[in-house]
Length: 353
Image (tube, rainbow, N blue to C red; front, side):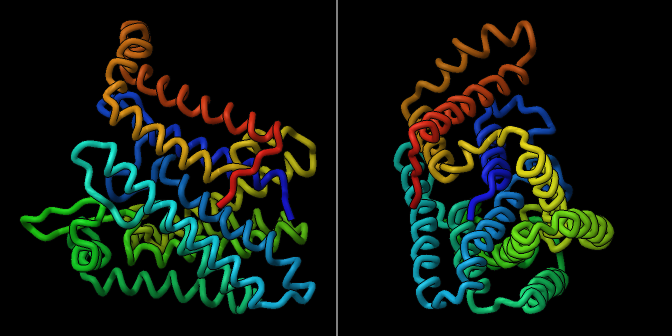
């Protein structure tokens, strides 16, 4: 079951990823285009949670009608696990590409697609084998409350001292996003322990997808507002933190995503507004992977510096400043992939894994 608004929100989310990840000059990035350094939540911090929320929505839209029609659980589980494995392997392959093309870059085991694939697998199995809303809510509550308890038991939320960082240091070592060999301290924003609360975000998407599929948009919007309120209040004792994916962050960003989905559904599916972003949404992983490879090629070949200086920095910096020039590069880069995905949609091409 496809819903245009979901494809549109997914596509806009991927476009936002590209815009944030591909600055022309990392020394000049507007504050509202940067992730929070540690505690806090800036606009870019909403992007990955909304993407994972959409993963949960899409699982419900795909599996819900088939489960209600009596489809065999084993027959449904196999393609879920196979697709999850392909997503994880693609994420690893992209990190191999980065290691080979970018001088001095080591191999990183975990990442955005790896976390997405793992959450897709577990949430898909939950949707198949744990079908009642009450049971799924129970798992969601157990995760967010249990993770809060784990973080508090860890004794600190500070970088390098918190429980997720200590686990990543011990189990990932130099395969983490950051690792200091001298101190033995590692950190990975998509690491091992933080994948658990990310799963809670996807489960929230499962429930959002069920409401959307049944036309309960008002319930979806009210639940989103309630989740944001709960997350905001919880943040008074458990800070919002994307890198730790704190339980308050799950509710705050998940609630916002539910409001976005409810609004998009009302505007696009009900009122007939154009599904802006749908082309990117139909080939979301292809756009993400393609942009990753393009970035590695441009950076690794050494043409990024001259290209940026000639087309963006020299003409735009005197007029608009270096921050605007950096953003202009990111916007053009994103627009190129937007046009490529629009062309693929026009020809009926779907690039799936």
